[in-house]
Length: 229
Image 1 (cartoon, rainbow, N blue to C red):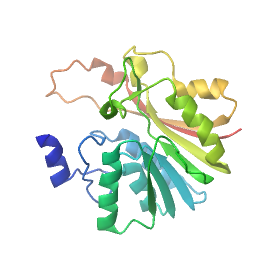
Image 2 (tube, rainbow, N blue to C red):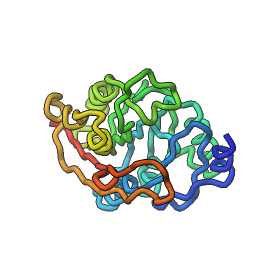
Image 3 (cartoon, rainbow, N blue to C red):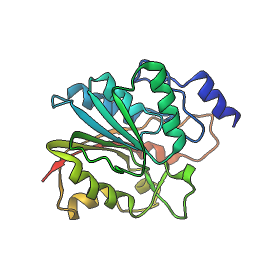
Image 4 (cartoon, one colour):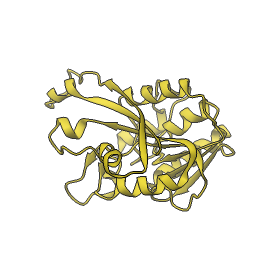
């Protein structure tokens, strides 16, 4: 609790953002940034429309704030964690972003029915092996998450739009599973095609940790860019 208060009070610096974030207790925020750098590089090259975007699982708001920085006009951001919504609402009031960001406390897309140019999703990277508590749902995904996401995303994506998923090979290299949910959708779903998959190696673990993280030498974060078939 004390650490969470310190993070909220003092803020957390994120390399791809101008301002610190102030995450509420129980709200996911990253402690490494390779996946955010992949997304930032993609945004730097993006030449498509920027009328709207949807950020699924907004968390501490980093992906949404990156899109605001890159001039997206309206972002619909959702999350099932009430503290994520409260934290983002407070930040928006202090930074006059309410006209650019619309928050929805809901699972996946909820009642958001717009068709958009860009859908962004940074899902959990590890399949659950037990019933997750709500605070764990930013870390572990259940069997229905990806099928439900893709089934809903295809309805919300504009004809020339793109779905971006930020993922990792973490579950595969740690032998949790051999199945990759995005690869499975592309092989079986008949809804999306792959435009590009960008990958970036993760930096070595801190020498100060006592945990065995030998697998970090093999870990890569991934940015999957999908469009409609």
